[in-house]
Amino acid sequence: MQESSTKPYLLRALHEWCTDNGYTPHIVVTIDENTVVPRAHIQDGQITLNVGHLATNGLRIGNDYIEFQARFGGITEDIFVPIAAVSAIYARETGAGMGFEVVESAPYAESDQPAQASSSSSETKKSDDAKPSHLSIVK
Image (cartoon, rainbow, N blue to C red; front, side, top):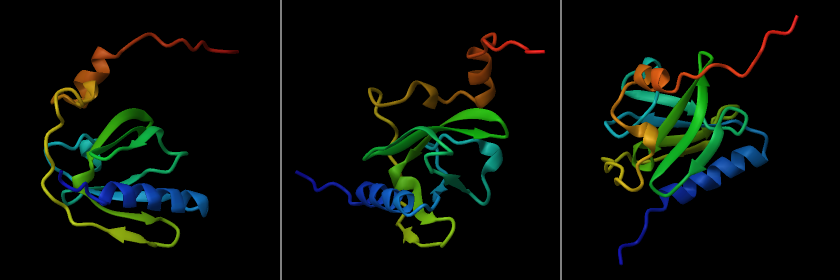
């Protein structure tokens, strides 16, 4: 049996450490074909994501990928990041954290692939999910 990577365990531990100490955990992700993030926010092939509990919804740091929802410019986006693509996690306030080697990520297994992680663009997802709002204007 092949030994599992320590990277996801270290990411979860440092995320917990940041949270316990009142810091805001951020991850730096090297973008590849298996990364689903808002393309407009990518700089030099990387994106820095706030993975604090106040900035995310449904955060799950698994052994193979990190998934959550976050708002970018007021629009909720589904984020899927392979653990292999994470190059660092750090506390925004102090810079304390850890860097990691980035390796080529494997495509999501068909049974593990999130429905939103298809190759369709964000615009297609938005139009498919368009529903009338349940909110009403209060005067």
